[in-house]
Image (cartoon, rainbow, N blue to C red):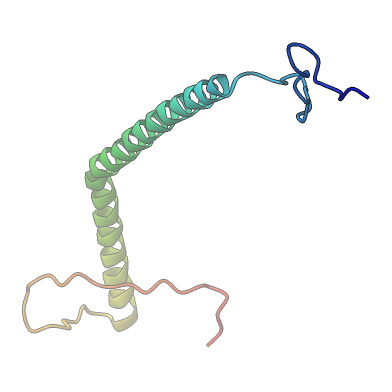
Length: 119
């Protein structure tokens, strides 16, 4: 009985892997796409920071420019309150009284209290 021999040229290779079709793009394309999206995001983020800084600068300068106006309003209100206080004092006491021993102006401090608080 003759021994079985391999066919001439050998056996076909044994298929031990599944031959599945490749799905999607190559990984390099995904990497490029993610890099492009991140670059655009960082660009827009930088623009946002610049805009925030510009708005903060504008806000600061607008407040600086408003300081003289607000100070003048406060001074006018102080003069009005002082004159009203003197007039009320003169009406109640019949004469003006001096609280301090000097003629130097002392800025009064007013505590704002709600009108609905009972004593």
